[in-house]
Image 1 (cartoon, rainbow, N blue to C red):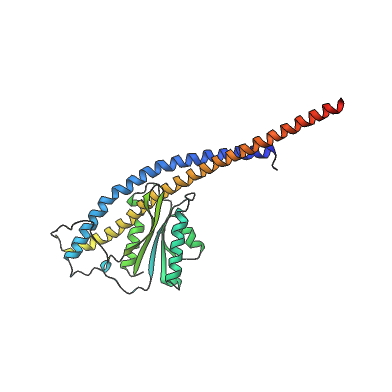
Image 2: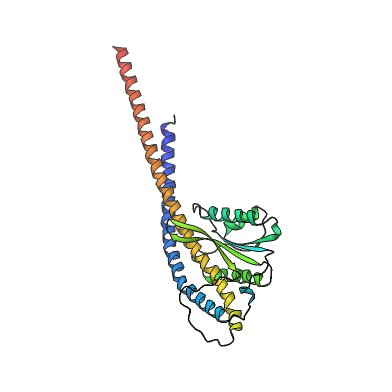
Length: 285
């Protein structure tokens, strides 16, 4: 049985850990609130640009832009969005497990795929397994702006246009609520399933639709990446907030159990001392 000093030491260390997890929970709650707002504010922009792209593409059936046309798949790109830090529950592991299993099921050779990693956890996961990471960006702020991933997004789209891979999938955690984040697989390129979110409007093109699509389609694909990043950041902060709350609750439960154990051990020690005193007094009589 543990001594009173050992139990007291565990109670003290657990209380200190609880204070840390409580503080991290409050910090994550503040970050989550801002990240959720950023993700929601970006939705109207994505709906509008999707409507414009879909309208122009539908009205320009004769235009065969490379980003709109499927081609034989010889190599696949996987854009994986994770965090730079841990302590976020299953946020990272659920994505990486899904991507890794997908790669194993779809491909037989490393030459058939390449990874684009956003986040240090995902980058390290693939590097440690000797999987080629084509592009990477780490150290993103908690509330990222488009300029933070502009180069990577442009390069990812450019590699597809250059034929470095023939399709590009994106994996991230879609934010549903503070307690639910769903692993999402989305085919980013080619843009073969552009559907407007509402009724399509009629547009007059100036200059030609070909020139407009040449500029607009890469911007649309890059915006999809940024939108997924905002979605993922909201999920990350929510997952970390929930994980720290669970850790704080578990610490409180452990402290209660240890306090009960400590009180029982102290009571037993006192009872033992009283019994020894009474026994000693009886022996002197």
